[in-house]
Image (cartoon, rainbow, N blue to C red; front, top):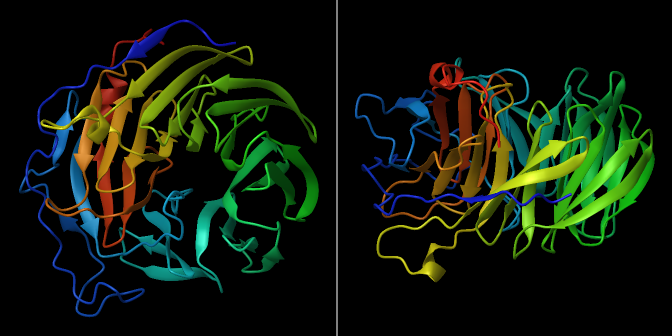
Length: 387
């Protein structure tokens, strides 16, 4: 199942901090919701030409910033921003509230009020779900506003949640638990379908676009692969992929690739062929000038695949300040972007692509960053290049 083709990307050794990113002069940075004395409009850095990039490639056209603050609850669980339907609408958490911010109109609304600080959220297919460290879960229908579930779904921390189609009319909510299982519900009924046993505390999972495969990552060093048959999830393989725990994984929109990100600073890309995971690329270590090998290890927290077929970009976060974008088909083409101001270490609460892959949104504790992807350049690449 595990192919022998391994590519280790050789990154440039130049300093990655690049040009200076101007700090946002935020007033009242600890207030929730709208900040006093500030507008919700964007700050456009195109005139200054600053992308703060350390790169062997450039995938970004422009950058804007919005005065929306995000928060997180667990220092390792940082996947708290979503852009599921409208490219201009971004969902994120601020303490106990899930907000939706429209970057075009400036409209800012709260969509889910909680009595706990969520460890993760997901928004998609007309539903918003939040889970918490005290086993709490809340599910709401965005169309009707009705709450489908509010209570406890486990006995310990809930690490993440996703909503995925398993067929044309089969929508499921999947919650990754510290109890070494994935709990699966049917939407909108919230009927419990099954518990999928995993041989580790489960931090994240994803389902292939055709609904045939499930992958999961957790507190060990493996990627777990399951085949989906109706309500049954059949264990297929456990692939040793990195040297520390993992908190994120995802499929490509065509189902041909699967990616996992590890806390040891490793990104592993798998090629999926006939339900087998073959050929891999390994991208490990993001080193700045003057750093030792130990200092160069950066925690990878969240990894996302561009949702539009044919764009083939992966974006992933470090725990603070930096994000990375790379070409799946040529992983040596790698761009590092500092999203925090220079000389500051700012926690990143998550990142996501817009559904058309035009924007990459990064939620920080003091701002929301919008990066515009150069889609025209991605569409003009030579055809026939695959891992």
